[in-house]
Image (tube, rainbow, N blue to C red; front, side):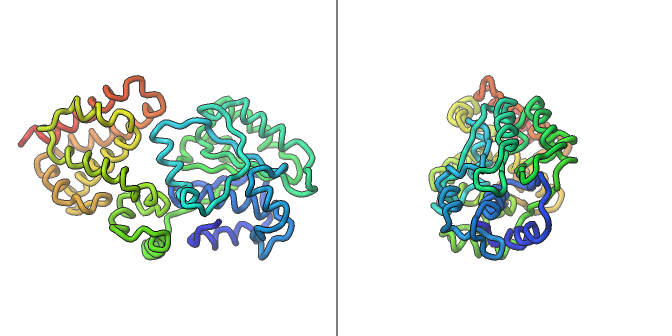
Length: 344
């Protein structure tokens, strides 16, 4: 399915001749992945209706069952907690039963050269149905350098009747040589009112506006945020951030060590809100925690906050290879406690 805020973009893509490679990029949670799948199914459909898949022909049935012979999809086989958050944000509708299983060809973690070579070999074959051959790589930034370089030959000399769709949440992590050989299509955030209306239809009625703010305006991310268990864990962690340094940091880090990626996101947004309170007098993400972040902002040094925010942003690269998650969390929380509690 194509989310309502991406319908016009889909129509625009189908109204012009498609290149051999399209790079859909933008924040997680705006439906890029679903847009890529809709584009693939629309091309492979044997009875399209105004450029969109009919959903009933043999090709659509095969696609929905995950076994269309002219479609492949490659993703990392396993993700750490940070990556799973992105996947839930991008494919949140799938958890609601709105999107069927698709054909999947998986590589290792990260996306390896072997996985990419399998895709390029597939694209070099003749079409089984006499039409397009389509492959989706998601998230494209998970390709390691060797894998990305292996893709360049196909990007530079594409076979006829081939469409390669790359989906990226972080386009800056892609090789410039890959980016330059694709048609870049930015998939942005929907207008707030439209996003809230969609969330209401999806069954998210309680605190939808607050959750949308926390998600940075990405509606699909809200579906993960609204999960009761996840909301409870987040609330407990933020409660303790508001009380630091009185809490036992080692115990807190031990309790959340299996959620390193999520905790990193929470802490990064919390620090952003604290800075925003200090500089602009209002938060961006945790609207319901405005009093807490304002209090932390009053007792924290601006330079230290800015430095810590930069350190946290750079620390994101360790989320893919956390040797000791508990120690990683402890280091962040100790640093935060020094800033938030030093002048109490």
